Image (cartoon, rainbow, N blue to C red; front, top):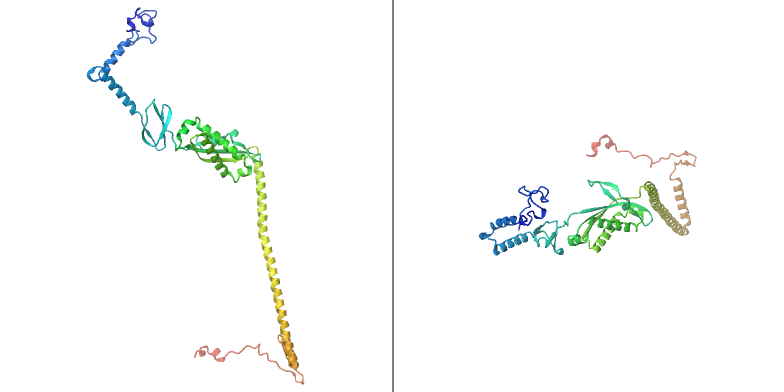
Length: 379
């Protein structure tokens, strides 16, 4: 029954057409006379329009069934969805996880019974610890000291900035969707905790020089084990150390000490190199001197042995013929004495100096034929 037929003629908002009230809360109606809409009239016109789509022109039981079945068919068709190559489909029924789907055209019961989430499992995401980058992503905008200052094993403090690059685990995307409420915050907390654990087991000198690669690898391993224990469904691909240095307050002093230590190591290395060069040379010279002495000893012994053998042989011959041996010894001795000097022969018979012809010193004359006619030799 319309409100216009109620007793009082004004409906629930009072009298219509009066001067002091009787207007609806929406103001004037569609006709501009201030009357509320007639619900029966609206329903009647809706039924008339619906009859135009129903066979036979009447709203019977069969038409209602067809209408309901069509609506259900359209609703079921909305359950088809597409999974891209970089995504994994996570199917849910009434909010409960039922399985994952790979790329391609897939189907799940449509909303509100079913629901599908498609996280990107190939995107590489970065978490910054100890600093915040510029909006363009180039360089560091500012340091976050409460994150970057860490205590080492030798009770020093190091200022360390690093990144953790991660992605959703394609094998367990449901863990990432259901178990992590704040992925960036969780991964950042795990990364900072793991880095403090690793830095706390090393001395500052090793952290600043030779063990940065091992520090990054160990932090990545600890992060992955912790996140797997949480069931986070996250893969830590790499941990990158951006800056490792002493705190700014003592940085220059630390660099001075480090430079002095490096100079000390350099001097020690130079001394070691000099010693390694001089000591072998001295040892080689000593060995050479010893070998020369041994060779001289062998030579002297051999010469003495030969002289003794020669003397024994001469003595045996001397015993056999003393006169002949004495004359021979005299002649050999005079030959050795006068053989290499200039000699002048004086005849004792009174004839004076006898001319001496040094035949060995005069050059042999050339044949006359060869000098006059060089070609005669060929003839």
